[in-house]
Amino acid sequence: MTRLADGDRSAFSTVFTTLRPLLFGFARRLMRDPADAEDAAQQALLAVFEHAHRYDPSRDVAAWALAITAHECNAARRKSRRAEALDDAVAERPAPGADPETVAIDRDLTAAAAEALGSLRTEDAAALSAAWRGERPAIAPAAFRKRVQRATERLRAAWRSRHGTP
Amino acid sequence: MEHRDDLALARRARLVYESARLRRAIVRAWPVPLAAWLAVRLGTSPSHVVVLAIPLAIAAIVLVWRGGVTGRAVAPGLAAGAAPLIAPGLAMDCAVACSASCQTWCATSCVVGGILAGSLIGYRASREGHGGWQFAATAVAIAATTGAMGCAMAGAMGVTGMLIGLAAGAVPVFALVPRRS
Image (cartoon, rainbow over all chains, first blue to last red; front, side, top):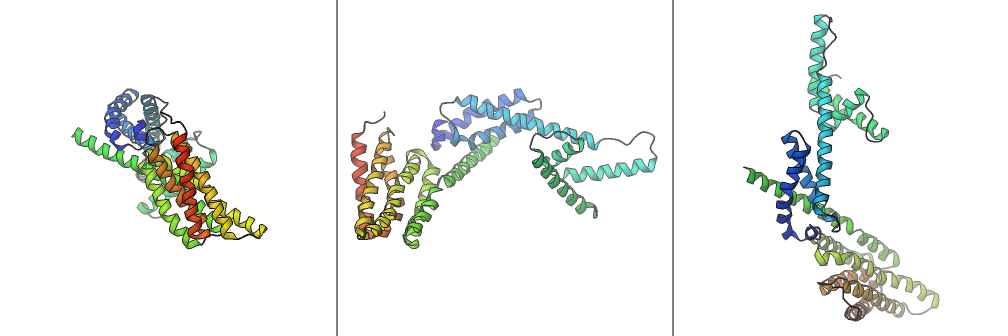
């Protein structure tokens, strides 16, 4: 890794073949879903190579790479939790005892909203979900408000492109 | 199938690695436009500065992107080149104050700036261990181009004086300072 950090391309394949099984194995142990683990490990491997030039030779390579993998796994888990929360919100049913017409309208609106939401990026959908649920954001409130505002604009645009007026 | 996926992932990783290095190299070349601006402000003709700054920026980016000993030599070369870059501009002010000839003051300041830059490079190259000569040669070339942007105002005599000064500063210091193994 020290050689790769210094620009020695001949070290690339050695680093790749050494780190790949290590990171994939570690991600599989951290995450329940093997597919999610594979995605997170891939992201981690790419992040390792992206930051290779910043590698500090005084640090242990495996510890450094595994820390990046753990971070990617945490990010993937957060994303997955947000997506699940969004699915739950979309799947909410109208109150029992509502008349059939209201139920039908609610169902159609829910399906249309889910379709528009599904066309958004994951970050936008997660921001809207967090805002609707009144969750406390992990980022600065001003940045979160801006993100929600942008996500709302995109949702409006997605709705307009499907159903005309918002 | 897995082998093919591995190859695709390796290709992506390589692309990410190279593009990150290139971005870093572009960022690391920031002193070049600053040096060019300074040279123009100090009185060198903009056309001379452009002719020197563009190849210097390209060389700095390519060398840092490639990495290794020559990549490490870019930043010290640019830093050392600051001495002959600003020395003639300062000497020019002095020449006006002393009513002496600009050519004499500028050319002398280029030689002195070159010696200072050469000494710094020689000392830094001696710390490099293996590949010290390669480091010194690259850093001297970078410093010479940077310094030439300032010394160009003294004409060919100034640039030649700076080159002589660089060699006179770098070679003895590099030869005499004990190497780091």
